[in-house]
Length: 222
Image (cartoon, rainbow, N blue to C red; front, side, top):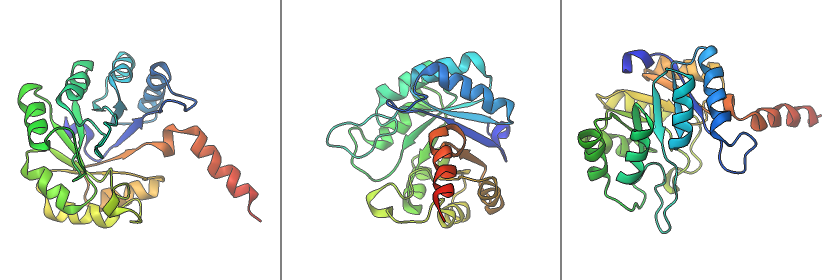
């Protein structure tokens, strides 16, 4: 599966509740458009979206379930139950929040469950080099820079975090994935040149309200 994704673009097709394109049918159409544009894979949130996308495209899917648990910081596929929902929906790879934030279930047990019980590869979403090293030691199959800039100890870091990508590439043996605010083809190519296995792009492709805002705000400037 990694060979299918290597050197390519994974499009993150997500729309949260309250956003104009929220809904599985919209995300399935977005995934189909991404495939027609040359995407090598899809990243999707929640079992309903994953099932709908699987019906329209045959690309590998990185599945997640974003869910906040009161009193805990980690929010991306943080429990065994969430992981099973994603696996049963047809995700080929399961991504988990592998930061050091507080969590409702222990990370080592979650990773072991996904790999052994669900028989799925695990992508670790991290924010720091230390978290990436830890994720590799726990058996994660790939490590992404997804959460750099979003955790308490990485707020204010440049995004995309090219420095983190380079540090992870130079330190880890598992593939490193570029994800998080990669908002131009030039930045995606820079990430590949650094040595990441593939690039995940979301809002720059799949959130038209954000794309429109860039144009509108630029036209307002004198």
